[in-house]
Length: 179
Length: 100
Image (cartoon, rainbow over all chains, first blue to last red; front, top):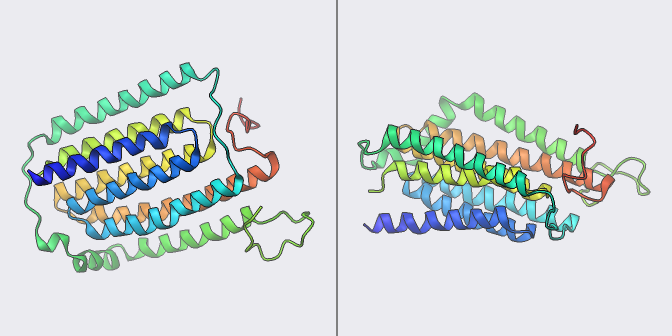
């Protein structure tokens, strides 16, 4: 009973803040609202027996990625989006498309899994030790490749965001991201 | 105990909201935020399936999704900075050189 209440609170929080992310005209508010969504989803991860994923979500997503977004929003000084004049048919089409996709998914989920038997959480399933063992044995190669991907992404980001060569100041080693 | 189906349905709702946002907004940053929202709803689906099937693989895939999302955000935002330097806007209706 209590678990259901907690789930409903975080689910409503996630949906409401997700709507703010999508609907608010000021990107700073959208970004901060995304933080609320991500933390609510992290709470749901804990309830699903994935506390380590939840902590990673809070650390990496809200701690690093969203801060990066905020930096760029403030760096580019993006103001409020003006109301569009010709966007209504596009909005209606996009809304209907999203709704149709949701209906498809919901039908599939309900038909497949409604009332499916659900084992209680075991200590072994939640344990971080078992998770780490699996990550660093079966998925070691993928893990290393993801590390390589992150390195490439960092290099790409610095190259893309570095000052162009013909800028008045010397371009340096590209470590300077400020426009 | 909360049925896993509820989590799956919640993830579908969030994904639909993110899709609608990515399709309707014109500010590049907000579209990016919508895509992050969609990625995260997929993460929720993966963790819910990991709970449903009693298999930790779903959680491990979430790590990789997180890492790829971080890489995507870094490169994407750097692209926005580069575009902004040339065009002084990231309104996607005005960045239409490659559109037909």
